[in-house]
Amino acid sequence: MHRTIIARCPTVVVLALCRFLSAGPVEAAEGHPPPEECTIAVVAGSATPDGRPLLWKNRDAHEWSHEVRYSEGDGYAHVDMSAVDDTASTRIGINETGFAIINATANNLPDSLFEGYLNGTLMKEALRSCASLADFEQLLVVTGLVGRNTPSSMGVIDALGGAAIYEVGNHTFVGYDANDPQTAPDGFLVRANFGFSADTSGVSTTRFLRASALLAEAKAEDRLDLEALLATARDLWTPEVDPYPLPCDTGPPQAPHLTGYVDALHTLNRSKTVSFGVIHGIAPGEDPRLTTFYAAPGQPAVTPAFPVWVAAGPTPPELDGPLGSPLSDLSYERCVESYAHPIWRWWIHTNYLVHSDREDGFLVRVRQIEQWMLPEVAAHLDRWRTEGIDPAEIAAVQRQVAAAAFDEYAAPVSAPVSVEPSETVETAPQLLCRPNPARRTVRIERRGFDLGRRSVFVEIFDVSGRRIRRLPLPPAGTVWDGRNALGTPVAPGVYLIRPQGIPGCGSRPVHILP
Image 1 (cartoon, rainbow, N blue to C red):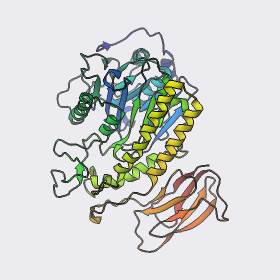
Image 2: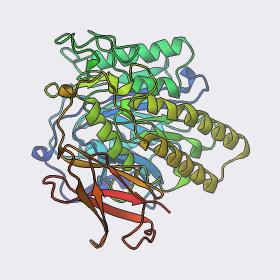
Image 3: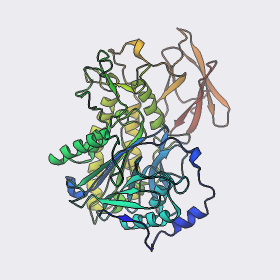
Image 4: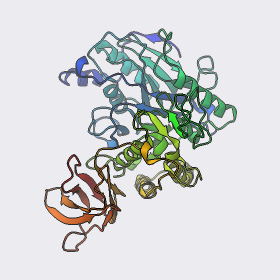
């Protein structure tokens, strides 16, 4: 498949056009954020060791807070990830039919339209209405009649073995089939910030070439699988510096004496990468509800990927809390710590990821979690493929894995001794509350406000605004035991923790689980 389609009479998904025409005004061009760039890959089942297709996306954006949500009642049930409160858009997701979708902005595709379908709303519609690549092509025809804003490359897989990338313009699209050896000799397709159906002169190819090389190497060694894509998502190689093994034993070309720093402006794991995910499809004939979305609402180098399934229903509170995603919040805190240079804010300090003794660090913690989590999930999937699935059991596994992984992730990580205090970034005053969600005990620490040895106080409120507890907060931090001022355990729910007398430091939501 490699063709341009301008119009074709659709037989399905006409509902998409009706939804658009009744949706009201479309966001105008002047309201859009700057163009964003992502890195994606589509891998056909013929290229993977287990014969199941894969999707991978690193999302580069200006929105740091992300959630993973379950939706039903309007077309196919689906699980997707996008910015907090942006429920009308999808950036990566799967539905109950085994259809999955990702995207990356293609800055070189012609763009003369300042209205029409935005990428996120088009992808959300695809999850609601598409069960196959053929359905998605018809959706592109329908939406092309109205017009689409922000051209991009969209990767899709389905339960029939389909795997393709569509370079989607304002009114037309070009399809590239990952199962076609002429289009994808190695069985995979990669896109970054450009498409091949337009002029590619002058485009940046660093991430495209690096991702392609890593996937080609994995394919040659018969290990182009979930773990290979997770490693690719976290890659910090640059054309100037190979930082491996971590921590990096040199510095950026501009400052080679700053050992440990890597210029992450154009790496696969970029300074602006805010979330990522890998989708593990099914082999033809398997239950499409076994399509697994490994979702990570945070930067790859500091965030583990949690498995979610449509059959499980609502996603765990660690991924979709009432006031945002606790995993995303904690990931952001660790990301801020890792980008430690006070001037070159896109330089990541690899000593925060892997300490020199290689026994701790944010990336070490992520790997430790995935070392037990991925085999455990794989064992469940093998059994469900043989015995059939029970949605209640899948929901229980999803909750248990997320809770155990988050508890391990939220445990304190020691600071690297090799980072000088003068190199750290001054951050806005904030409270760190870990774990979050918590089953009872929460450790509260202060960041970004130095009051010497003087203690301050934190107040804890319920969502109605009633203060239920006041605690001293010394420099070393404190612990809230999940009880109110009378010593009674609080009910499960969301509580707000706020320091007294610290300008610019807002409340921190904490979710207490049953």
